[in-house]
Length: 77
Image 1 (cartoon, rainbow, N blue to C red):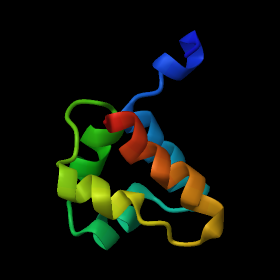
Image 2: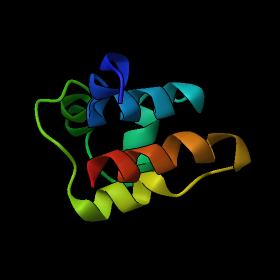
Image 3: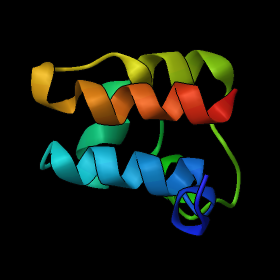
Image 4: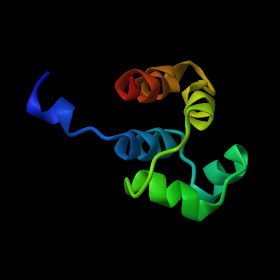
């Protein structure tokens, strides 16, 4: 694994997924039934979502975002 790959945090992956989907923090938070502040904390690596939430995040909304959403679970293991 190179240096760039080791710097990818769960928060960075969540933010990347959200921006790839063209969603605001508020929109994704609403879809996940969490507050915008909780999502913001995840993206800033203040804390991490629990395993059930990671499973929700890993479910692709379409084929284009499958690669990004599956990275969240894979790198968490």
